[in-house]
Amino acid sequence: MTAVRIATVTLVVPDYDEAISFFVGTLGFELREDTRLSETKRWVRVAPAGAETTILLAQPKDETERAAIGNQAGGRVGFFLEVTDFDDTYQAYAERGVDFVRAPMREPYGTVAVFRDPFGNLWDLIEPARD
Image (cartoon, rainbow, N blue to C red; front, side):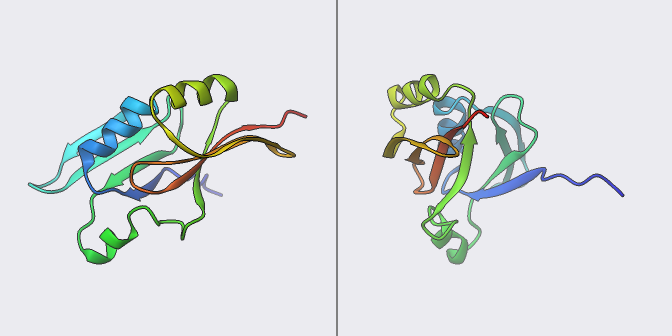
């Protein structure tokens, strides 16, 4: 059977450059690709260093897509950043102005805090529990 993987997921954002600034400048992701496709459309992919799966940053093409900005998971946490050193990452993100909406908590599955990106989406910052 052919190997299957999730290569890219789409995140609708209001502005390419604002999104690049947040993901690359604030979260420290890599800008993997920024290709102009037309006057208004770009193919922009970002990812944490070493990650295989990328996020495609996409500007909305219509009002339906625009309405999804910040609510792409229906108000739930929709994105999960797994880290190996929660305390250092949490501190660095807090110092860079990341909007944490739930303080760090120890859960059976790991240490987690919830932050909101500038577009309204909720993210878990999580260090999984070690066995």
